[in-house]
Amino acid sequence: MKKQLFYLVAFLLIVFVACQKELSFETGNAPGTATLQADINGDCLPKTVNGSYEVGVPLVTTVNTISVDVNVLATGSYTITTDTVNGFYFNSSGIFTNLGTNTITLRGIGTPFTAGTFNFKVNLDTFYCDIQVTVLPAGAGGPADFTLEGAPNTCTNANVQGTYVLNTALSGSNQVVLNVNVITVGTYNITTTFQGMTFSASGAFGTTGATTVTLQGSGTPTTAGTNTVPITVGSSTCSFDVTVESAATGTLGGSPGACTPATVNGTYTVGTALDASNTVGIQLTIATIGAYNITTDTVAGIYFSASGNAAATGVLPLTLNGGGTPTASGMQTFTVSFGSSTCTFIVDIQPAAPLSNDYFPRTANSNWSYEFDDDPNDTLYRTAITATHSAIGNTYNIFMGNDGTGLDSSGYYRMTSTPGDYYEWFDAGGFIGYDNPLWAEYVMLKDDQPAATNWKTPITGFPGTVSGNPLNLRFSYTILQKDVPISVTTSLGTQNYQNVIVVEEKIEVEVSPGVWQDATATLDFYGKSYYARGIGLIKYEELDASDQVTFLMELRRYVVL
Image (tube, rainbow, N blue to C red; front, side):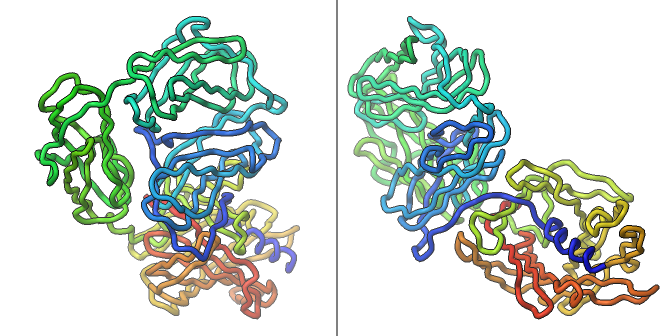
């Protein structure tokens, strides 16, 4: 029986968590503040994928990297991570030393196990954007063979994006999408420079046939007018036209004071990313026709921008589009600059909606990432999905876990609001090691009871057989602390949580009919779980019979929707 109970301990860890690789954090420095930039589709702006990715080939941290631009608002330490997808992930940590735009390179870690194109979510504090990485089939990691559509003449249907202004540096919005025909899958690296502008892209083609590749622009245009930019891949050459405009001149309405008029549209809430409804209408008076590219300063994590061409002099109504995610509430002042002219407008940012009262939230797409035993490279990831599961007349939210091999089932949960009981539906037979499956539910948490409350779940236990021998186990829970503050320290730093319930979890064995015995001494094991209101499980400890911690799991990052 003791052997089976040790199996139970091993399975117990799986009940609570699932896996994700993340990164270490440089301590000893004050945290910096920065924002990630994303386009309307949520893709990082700009984004660069370096190196080749092949099934079964471990990534090289100096070669397999991704690069993103961040807008640094305050210098200090930083950590940028991605989730783990298809067996690998990216991370970077360090110190921001310069304000403004910084390009950060994240190192790839892990080994891809499936071919295809995979989406990685890049995370910096409360900001997110997406990057896609293509993994090639095993043995296909060499250079791709492909041609440019339209060669040797004009590139077919080249899509030139963004506004190009003379003597003004290109930004993430300056991109060119080209059509190509892939003959052999593999990696590519494309670059061309013309009249001060550089367009480049690198990555991999995972399938043959017609596809597109996006070149990112950089540099500063030196020649106004139509610039016919040549691009060559092997023996294939085509060209595309970039129109560089002379800069418009003029003044902002209300300069040098408050912008007049200024119309702020949309709702602004801490923690909610801006969308197409978040705009500000201002007014320019154009003195000289030409191109403009206007961006406000970044305040409380958000900014506003507009670009285009002024075709006539006089009054020009202008719509600034918002970007970013608010990080602070209140009346925030933004400064608009156009040449030597400036004006300001105010945006009222509302506080974030109150956290859920749930101590174990189950809303779809919420996700949590945990670190094991203070090892930054040994972590687990869980997420709640939209689908639900029905059993014994109840509806359970489905959690999925990722241990680097892809998402897999990681538990079924429900809650009753009166009383505040949280249930898990699970295979007790497989969990304990019984001869046969035994699906059942038990109460893992009560949020409406005071400290010292104890409950046995289920009262009758989970009866079964091991190699034909009867065995019956149940869980015994005791609330040790109720709604207390708890600090959790991981490689990402220290996080303080409020309204935490601390629950002790022990296992009992039925030694004779109706007689139960605490198995802590036999197992040399019991557990403690820490649940924060509105967040979920923030910490789990495994302890031996002498109360020494033998295993530790702590929350590193979470998103509760």
